[in-house]
Image 1 (cartoon, helix red, strand yellow):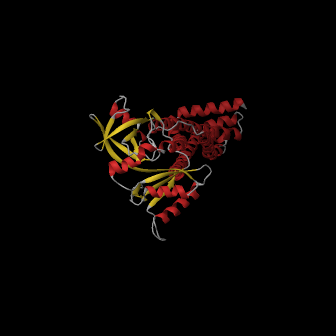
Image 2: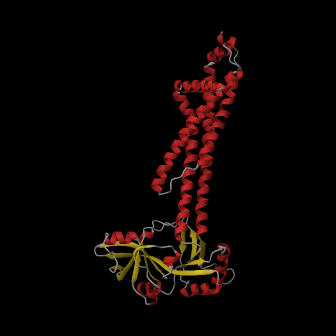
Image 3: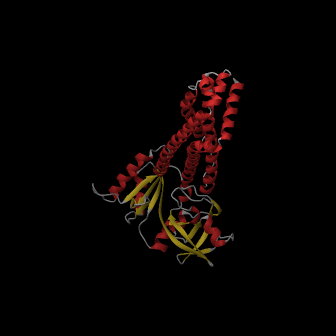
Length: 406
């Protein structure tokens, strides 16, 4: 049996080399189908792992409250229609009346220019309570975070992101020095560790954190906030908690039945679900494209094998005369068809892995191989090879040796 299998493989490979151009065209469909399956399978796993990592770094058990409503633009982008109705006292009431809430972090975020000496940088300002560093898992590489006493005393102190420190101070020790935030001198008391871009597309290394009271009174002169992070206790169902927060906040804002909310509530799971829906959509499109490619590849192999059988009548007749049975002819052409499909599948796997490396490198995703998709690709390639070769193989058994040799 081993000798017979080796013989079939040898004949199949010889035929591939003799008809390189036609066989290459036949296996291209299989190659593209497997490439897309393997590449997207690997990339999607890397994307999901990166999203999970970003969410775990953002903080646990968080409900995010934003003033205003979320709407989707014509291009599918999510934007906020801001409102000025959310006040710090609203967040305080939520904390007092909902026992499931462990910590609250009211905040106001905006964009201001920051300057130190001759260096200027556009930064994202986050005015918040002092517990944001604990709730959001924000670590420092130097200095200290601001305290609740700094917030009460309305101190103009700031903790800056790594890129702010790197761009403005050029590795100079920033602690105790002052930067101009919208022309207002602000003391640097800490520098945040490098964190990168979060799941919302915000570069956390370009953020500057200052006490909320300081921002509201000494930078913007406002009495409202843009949102709050609500951290629940362990074991609390976030979906149920969203409903409680919404109902209570509607009562606080005296919203009547039928009136729209003037705020938005979402969790990290909502954002994760949105991302995963996008990944699933691309996955469906990839499966459709791969199926079409497999069909095209199978038809290509089918046509080439029919042509090969017609051209090799003499070979079939000689083999029948010297003792080959019909099943030997069938196995020969089936093995050739399967080998063509496997070569296309193997090339597709290599191409898919190469694309994965490139995309993961530029997208900063963790590199992982989705073994399930690779195994499935090989299995489907074999099935396509069998399906495409079985009819031509049986056609080869219909040639009678005497007629062929005559």
